Length: 263
Image (cartoon, rainbow, N blue to C red; front, side, top):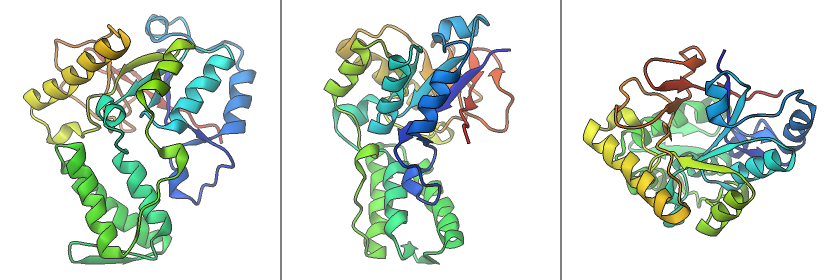
């Protein structure tokens, strides 16, 4: 069975109650996992041939970089899927902004709606804002959705360091220690709202920038938000993260990844 695992990064002193730790792993638990594996993670190409498990990291944040760095220090192959626009323009990821906003909000307001700052209220508000973020066709539009709600809610968003976006130099340092850098799309956009032509532009812009900046020749692609059914045929393997689908190969040129759950 083909097994490709995904994490979005690690953080020290992981706290499940904090949204800024959402989708991350405790750093010490992750290190223990890396050291306890009987077989090291292998490059993606070997994993697709059934020669071992692969480890991937999505989103160019410092938490993702730390996971990739720890993997290499402990003898594992790792692939880091990044969005060049966020790196080149030093722009935050919308989910990171949203989680930082919600962690400090006592209540949330958005376009005439209001939710209390309880766990249940934040879950409902998060779903509403995620719909608006996913409908956006640019990274700037995604940011404006969150900033609009934060203003209405009277919250100044403070992004924690582990969720800040990497610089081009940060990515180069990872590449120099053997981290496999690949394309996550120019911007972190949801494919459900993009036409085939828009998908093509977003993917190709990411490929071109990675080729120019880091000599990356791979046309493999990790789908932002993880869900896709209509792969463009002129590109390589597309990596999903779709909890409604089985892991492994999923249709022509599609590989569904598994969540690296360690606790």
